[in-house]
Each structure stands twice: as C-alpha cells, then as structure tokens.
Image (tube, rainbow, N blue to C red; front, side, top):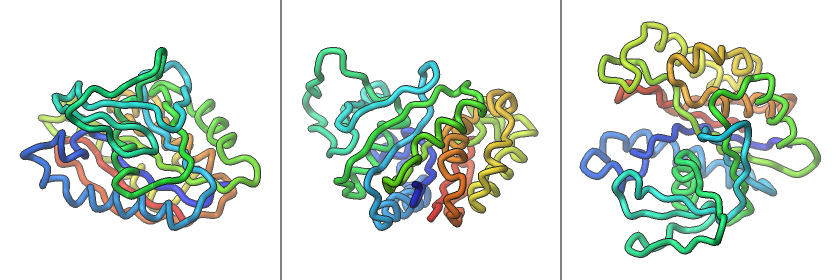
Length: 244
C-alpha cells in the first residue's frame, strides 16, 4: 500500500555541482524537494520506489546501488541509488553489464543521499511515450500487497513556457502545467490519469508518464496532496508536491 509520495522535477541543474554559478537560482526549488523527500522518511515506509522518465522501451527497473553519473553534463560526480555519491575525483567502479541510471534517477539519488535515506530503495525508469493504459496498471503493481511503499516521482512539466524554452513557446503549455499542478496539489488521481499523452509529448512534458504511474499506485490510498513549488524559471514547468 502507498503511504506517501513526493513529486519532484528532475533537471540536472537541481544538483548544485552541475548548476555551478547558477545554483542559487534554484534554491527555492531545492528546498521544496528537500522538504518533500524528508517527508517520505517520516512516513516510515518498508521500501522506497523512485520513478522517473528514461530513454527506455516500456519500463526498466534499477536495483539499489545502481550507478549514475553527471559526467555527461561536464561534472565529475558519480552517484549510486541508495548510497552516498562516490568520490567525484575518481572513476566509479562498475560491474560488467551494470545498468547506468537515467538522468532523472541520478538526480533522485542525489536528493536521497542529501536526505540521509538509508532504507531499501528501487529505481524504475519509464519510457516517456508509455501510454496511460500501461502506466496506471503498472503503478497499481508497485503498491499491491501489505508492504508500506513510498514513491519518489521525478518528472518535469512542459518545456514550452517561453521563447527560450527547450521546446520554444507553445501557448498550450501554461494550461497544461496548471492542470498538472492542480492535480498534484489535490492528489487527484483521476485528473492525472486523464492527462493527454499526445499533448504532453508535443509540450515535452517528461513528467506525464511517471505522474500516471503515481495515479495508479495511489488509487484507493486516500492520501492528501500539497503543492510545494510551481515555477518555470527556464521555460520548463517545475512542480513539487507531497502526498501523505
């Protein structure tokens, strides 16, 4: 059963080492994410599941200790899911055939390390094109049974909120993000399930599929939502929410 969920955006700039000189610009967002992740530990779950967008077909799972890196963003920082970041000045040892964390789960690994999370954790990468008809049933499987589960759901809103946004300006983007923010703030699983996957893809909203996994996982849980942060500083919708 689902006992709590935190929803956070997943730009690598959320990691101060990646943001460098621009780091203070996202301090309010980081504070909101830290509050949401801390609340997951307070819910005392038996296990934490991190869900985020990934360049995969369908759904792919990542075990505790799976390695990720921000070297592709010009920063010598390596992380492991559920453990502290490795020394940024040496290469991270990886086993043969080990899956590398997608960027969204690498950001989550940093958030968890900074929150001091020491419990069991599993990562789930969700392909961004995955239809709601698959996301929602998969979410149900994550919280079936008596085990107390908490979710950390990573994903951005639309990337079309300004002329300089990654997807350029699209007048539909603000309304899409406003509906997503309302649904996340109200823990409205029906509204999340109803988000238009086609429109989300056109608006480059990477959070749509993970949010719909959350919708399935939270069915019948009776959780209350709180929207902690809603902004689009780089033309991308960054939403943070807590369900408890």
